[in-house]
Structure formats: structure tokens, C-alpha cells
Length: 300
Image 1 (tube, rainbow, N blue to C red):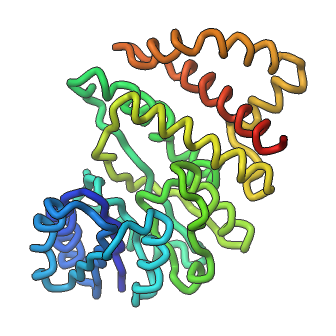
Image 2 (tube, rainbow, N blue to C red):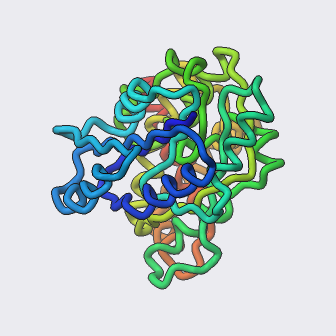
């Protein structure tokens, strides 16, 4: 028995829901597909309302925008079957065995509480240069190999495509205090691991469907540094790749000289990130600058 949970914000989910329903029917299981709209525009709501007429599908519109964390928490409370599968509204399912793969993992690993399927980005370059940065980042940083994900199961956890045994996670909520973008996934996975829950990564990805323009993606990355600094200073998150880099540079005495150089080169960094060949090292340097800035502001 399977509850499929889809948080929606300004996306058309009709094809996604139809594909998921077809796979569930083919697998001959009891299922429900719960879709919770988080204050989308009327245009998107009108397109999605058609799915409410599908057997096994429940589509609900919230009266206002509550945010990613609260919507996920609401969906967990609404789910009524033993195992729940979260999938983001902008996802595309590349495999006709997507549901079967999750069902097999559930049966093969009864001791596992959380199963993460993974994330893919299309290998075809976006036609518009303004989306190259997000695509490059996704392809090189978020589409990790299965072996790498299982070696770092918490740090490489993504909430766009994962399953949970509901009896294990009902007491673990997504943090509604994180208002800005970034690190909600890592915090939730960290809380789950601290509670003794086991996380397994499997090869059952979805394709990330929506790419952000470079400036929006950069803004999100910068904004996420406020979340990361807060979580680090409150001991809710111990380490990430960026935290380790910051600590190493500080330890060997190179942090301040590097940050001083970055401050004078920000315009050049922005230009390179928006170019036809964005290098992720420039994004890493920009994030390092804003992470340190957020740390110093918080500890004044």
C-alpha cells in the first residue's frame, strides 16, 4: 500500500499524476495520490483541478502559501498508508518501473526507514544561456552516483524524490522556521539520522524539470547561506562541503586574504557565472564569501 505525496506550487502536475497512477495500477497495489496546492496562481489551479476527478487521486488547494516545509508536514499527516513517496511537482519520471523499483526496495529492505531515489538532469544543454548555470550545477553536483550517495547518505539527500515508512517519520517534521531557500533537505535528513533512522539511496531517479535563470539561481544560493550559517551556529548541521572548505582555509590562514580578493572580484565572478561556460568554482567562491559574511553578522 502506497501514499504518493505531491506538494504543488505553480506547476502543472496532470501528466505526472497520470503516469504515477498508471504505474500503480500496473503494479496492482492499493494507493492514494495526495496533491496539495500551496497557493498557486489561478492559472495553474485551473489546469490541475482536472486530476480531482481521477479515481485514487485527492487534490486540495490551500487558501494561502504556507511554504515548502509546512506543506510537506501537512502531507505526512494526511497520508494513510504504511509507506509514503514524496515527489516534487516539476519532476519527470524516466522509467516505466519507477513505482516497481520503490516497491522492490521496500520489500527487500524492511529495516530501512527512508529510501532516496536520486535526481537527474537532462544531458541536453538548455537552449537559453540564462539557464546554463543551474543546468551545469545540477548535472555536476546534484546528479551524484549511487555509490557516492550511499557513502554520504545525509549530505546528498534530496527531498524531491524519496520514500518513508510513515510510522518511523511522523514525529520528524520539516523545519517551518527556515523561511529562506536552502538546506531544508539536509536538516530533515540530519534529524532523521539523529533519531536513529536508516537512510538508503537507490538508483530510481526522477528528472528535474524546471531550470532557473542564472540570476535567480545565484540569488537562491546566496540566500541559502543565511540558512546554512544559522544551522551551523545552532549545531543543527555539523558539516557540508562548504563548511569544511571554510574551516580548512581558516586553519591554514588563507581565509581572510581570499575573502578580501573575492570582495574586489565580485563583478567579474557574476559575469563568469552568467557566461556561456559557467565554472562552478566561481559559484563556490561566491557562496564562501556570503557564508562567512552571514557567520560574522550572526556572531556580532
